[in-house]
Image (tube, rainbow, N blue to C red; front, side):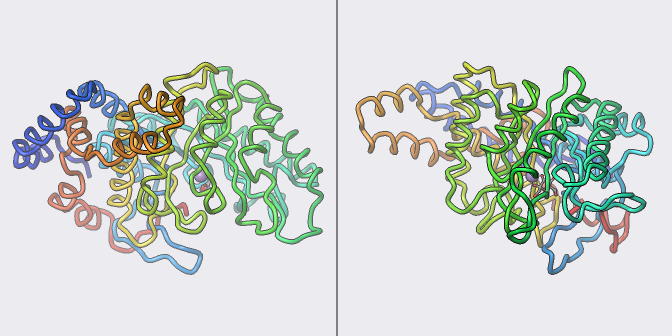
Length: 427
Ligand code: PSV
Ligand code: MN
């Protein structure tokens, strides 16, 4: 299914006058504060977030998964779904592939299909956390960190293969996330696991094309519950520095222990020029993979505040970041959930762009703690939705993507096309 521009525009017309009024009002209010609303709209319009190929099917937990009809059954249908998201939101102009869940059988045709939807290929993700059919060595006890050379070699070779697919599709980065760790004390030697990981990563790094980057994702626990080899940003940074200038840390919001100050991690990594990518989601307890902004929107704003500050004060030359949603939306329609996540990301970004940084720095210099908080919360409490809608409108997206998605009965069409009981690969 493909949405036609006129279908979206017809629905936009019904709300166009209201949007013009709301945008005009906010623009005036921001103008009085010396903020250029047009510049913010442009930044929002330029901001694109990758959709992972594994997020388009129904999510769930390890206790079960409840089906949503019309799920995509192959990579082509997944790209079509991202095309729908992009047509509605104009924010989802990239896909992040997980190999081997989504191996392109004809990469040139896959690339062409993505092109036709205005979608580019973002980071490619390797998977050494599951065994695949026909695989010689098992990853049961580890992959890049494993004590057996043959297992490590197989895991390195898989990453090389992922790079090969990425090159065919136009990707420019590889994300490595390891499940390696121990479920019980005594299972592994911490030092040897870490040393093996560093060596394996260096071998993968050696295969990286000159214009590529490697992202190293960390996670404190799960699936190993006693210890994870790349458990935190410090370990990720150490490994990235051990590889070279094309290796960076990747922050996944769900990969932190409760109450971790993620915004501070962002600030530190950007100060070092070593923040490469970002996986968005939200959580109550751990890596719950809930809709972005559904639980802790203020934290998301504070994180964006550091990202914006980092981009504006980029002494360490941190490269542009790879943004991706990494959620599994549990019981919702995956496409509706992704629309909500994209909206939450845009909201936090827009709010962060409103922060009066010079005033904040002056308040900090004066030790005016109250004013510092007031300035942040003034930005956070501004209703920036008219700015986001305006950015979408100018790119021919939907003023209200969820309402448009429902009015156009997209899910019903997908069910008719693909069937009620389809199953997608992925989480
Ligand atoms: C692991 O929890 C993770 O966040 C990694 O990014 C994986 O690639 C992704 O989820 C899918 O398993
Ligand atoms: Mn992730």
